[in-house]
Image (cartoon, rainbow, N blue to C red; front, top):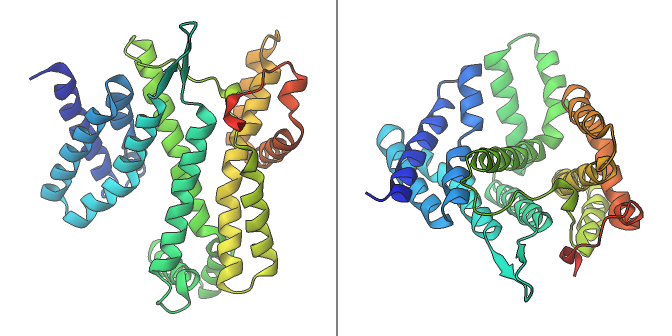
Amino acid sequence: MQAPVLHAFVAGLASALFALAATLGTPGAIIFAYLTQLPLFAVGLGHAAGMLAISGAVAAAILILLESGLFAAIFLVINVLPAYWLTRLALLERVRPDGDVDWYPPGLLVTWLTGMAVAGLVAAYVAFAGSEGGLPGTVERFLRAGLSMMVGGPEAQIERAVGAVAPLFPSIVLVSWMVMVVVNGALAQGALVRFGRNRRPTPRVSDIELPRWALAPVAAALALAVLGGGVASHFGSNLSLVLCLPFFFVGLAVVHAYARGRSLRWVILVGTYVAVMVFGWPAMALVILGFVEQWAGIRRRLGEPPSAEKE
């Protein structure tokens, strides 16, 4: 068996085992479940998207045998298909006349990832349109049942918790998924670079730029959240949160551009990431910074060259 195919089979086995860890329900197992896409990205970015497809097929077959066809189908939709498409795009290259290579821009990868999340959000609203209360009602019943089973406690306390979480629960799930896709892709690329197995150079965070039109969907979603009513307002609020995540990455790009070449570069970067993970609210500050960058072009003032992504 050729080495790439062998690697694909091993990656598929590892990915299936990571996915099955989610069924154990323990905190340690959940950590492994979050890394389900890591072997897929590793074999894809190290060889080709076709090898990733083989890994996905191997993993799906294992999950059908050990769990169920439905579990395998969900695995394919939320893990394999997004990883395959993003890997295929990431490995696209264009050779310039001078011999330099242009790789698919990281900002467009973020844009595609966001489009997948938006498609998932729309699909969820359509799928539960016929249920009582639509998706909002379904989410409330799901959370109420889950909290009652796991936490218990007074009914009034459970209702307050449901009321606090339910309005944005769909977007929280999708944003968490998007972050984990990015984390798994970055970890896989970092490991490949470490061992000299990467096919493309690692994209710089400071190079992340969104298309010029990226602010328009956010404005439309916010308008729907404010002016709409019922399910429409619920959809607009969740759509707004999903569409804000790309601007978080743009905000990080500004911070990386500012830190580049400065003596305290690592202090600035490590401090930013630690603040986001520990306190949370700096993430919103980065989103706002991303909005400002998209509108005013802060990186150009810092000497960053314009990117072709906005063309």
